[in-house]
Image 1 (cartoon, rainbow, N blue to C red):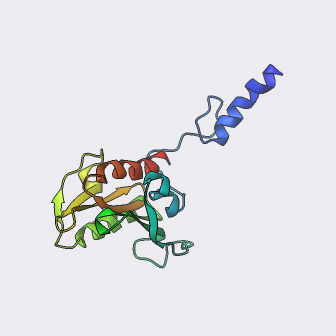
Image 2: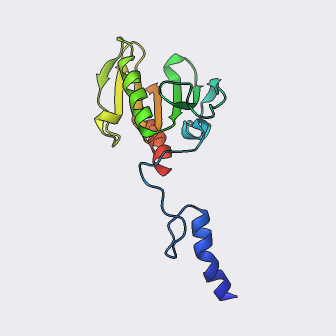
Image 3: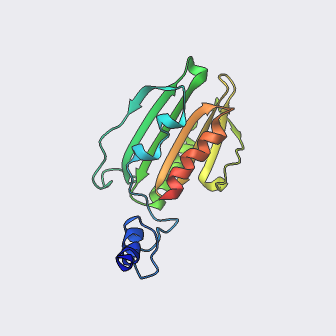
Length: 176
């Protein structure tokens, strides 16, 4: 009985996507494209206790991304609210066929940030080439955009919460 349990261990590890010492499934490379739906990479209600969903946008995913100049596959956006506009959090995620396509889309996103935002620095552990943060003084919010793997994400949140929420969003993409 003990031999069967030990023999099954590498199969269980391989099924979870973990590396196996017996040649099972290799670990996911840190730059491998993510295949999870965009919805699973966005902030979730459990991340924001006391908030409720105000708006949600979940268009059907594209099959190949061939009909989009950036190779866009899927997107999801959700706005959570607790009280007024100053207590809103919006989390948006877009997935692309590859890393280069997501990088190009992030460049376009960064260039399209409205002028009422001013650049600020967040310490969330992402290279400046793949992250940008902008404060909006009129409502005290910060807009944070990031590119991880084949994902372009953004969130808008009150300045006091944005670093914590940015780390949560980034961690979903890093897990692969």
